[in-house]
Image 1 (cartoon, rainbow, N blue to C red):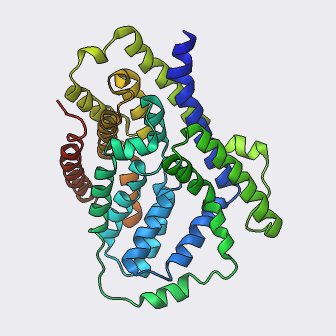
Image 2 (image 1 turned 90 degrees about the horizontal axis):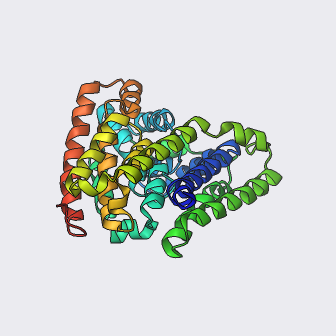
Image 3 (image 1 turned 45 degrees about the horizontal axis):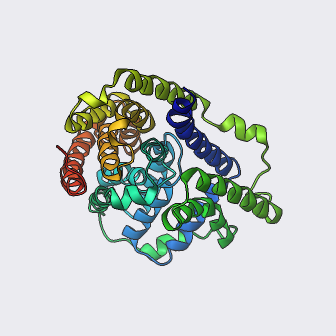
Length: 359
């Protein structure tokens, strides 16, 4: 019973809570906002209009918070207007580009959950499992949708909108905790929980350094502020789901009686019903995880199924938010969503089948 609790519940929950703690510290200390703003400012000087849009998407995508579309969509709308981007394409790029990080960033809570529950490392999932292939396909399909009404003066856009002389380049230190996780997991293949703990330490050091120099842009925070800003409702939901779903598998042995292809279909349907990436992974891996555990290729297939179901879910709020903010037809945007998911799903599973048979 103790082993069941430690490996099935404690391991994934500890990583999940640590990620939320890191996000809370970085949000409360203003590190994420300043870091992203500074990165866009300096990168805008060395790239074109397509570059600034993709850079903004990548940076905003790294911010691991719920309902990110409420932050990312207004930013993309403003930048799209500045560079004279077509409205529908702006809405579509904002939605699809804003979800690239789900398959590429270890700070994505759903990716962290499936790595922990599937007992695979970040580099193994990306390269041995092949998850980088559908991630690249997704990114390319987001990028090719970038369309402009007419040529604009990009240099003038940079001059007008990215002066911000009061934000020095040290603002980039705000992104150092995220960079730390990538380095420790990808290069040194460190245990993910250890990498997140290291990132928390780096985040605190960066905050104290920046606050000593600039206490206006980096406000004073307390442990109480961090504690209250953590998403305890989501933590409780994931904890409950993990207990129920793992108990179903542990005592029912469901996964042992279902073909692998059917499991992928069920994972997709769970995503459709839930409309939440973390909940989808918690349920799917809790029930069917024993069939894929320790195998990067099978975990990658499971994750792609969960991801596509989540993206296509009618209760996925991001697509509604983007349609509303960009004032676009929801049905038209959803049809584009279906087309993109069919392409990514078809090519993605075809590629992943070379790493592990689908049947």
